Length: 445
Image (cartoon, rainbow, N blue to C red; front, top):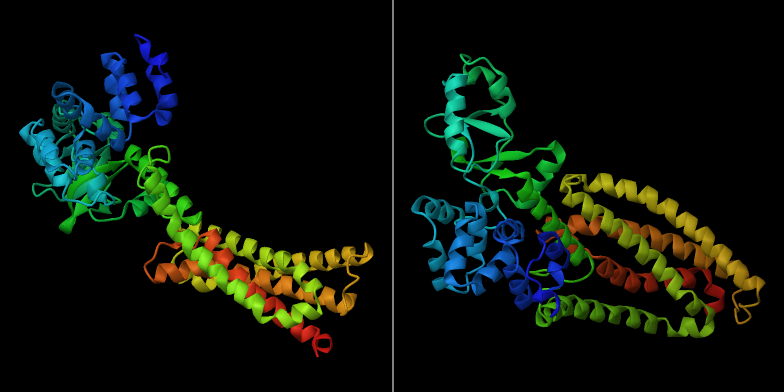
């Protein structure tokens, strides 16, 4: 990086490409080489975590300039990241004009993953009793105050109750003497100020909104959430779910920015749980030592049996968890999903069971079952039936576990593939050797 940082001018697009690979010191060096226009655009477009890191290192004059340029909702997000330095937080607040400081303070009262923590308080508003020409003049005046968006104009009464919404286009197309109340759409989709960001993202995806009004008690409008805010939410939520489904706790920052200590702490917990879970598998195998000694060939097929169930369970858990995250499935759908998975699991189990039978046949053909006192048909039946049962069990377990976790108010994403696989490994040994004992009774006698 040393040679590059000696350049007198850096293009913002080039900086974007390598931004995630730079450490904090390099980021400051590169940022300082942007021209003023590029620097302001670049600063406003990076995540609030990166903005906070840069602001901590900027000299006071530069700190004031860039922080004052942030929209109130973005400024609130940045200030919440200074919870470890109350003095710095107050200093940054004092950079803001009094009106903006009040907006930011109000936004900070909300949790960052709630609608109130995502919204902007700068939205276009008009009254229902205005004529179109009067409303246009009023909106033009508001534009000078740097509105968040001009997609929609919200119609409020004197107590700030949301009465309806008018599109910018419809307002300008209408006759000047028409009343706003005659133009507005009264059936408005809103979000509560305490609604979780994941639910809001589902609303945006389902209805293709550009912005949604945020209301509190009695339908009093307090702000709007725009699509650009939700893009960040979708990325954050998807990343968190994927990390949890990989068998770890979600990281608090980007992979490249997370410290080695954080990476260790986030990963070690689940690894220990899963490691201890394998003890059940080893104990299960120890319980069937006598059976394995009599038909040693049964051990050969243990990986095949457990993997078939584990893979099926992982598939089911992943699909159901994702469907829950997208709002496609709810707790009330539990029985419907169970019915589907019983059918699909049986079909998958039958397919893999037949394949298992053919594999045993191939072993027999190539003389790999010489130490098989049970004979071909009993062994083939044992493997086929075990695969069928484990695949069906895995499909049911994987699909039902997310519902169980959600009912217990635990994130369904915790039904990770490694977790499901570990459970099925342990139970699979018991199921496999129980079936073998029933079918090979004469051999074990």
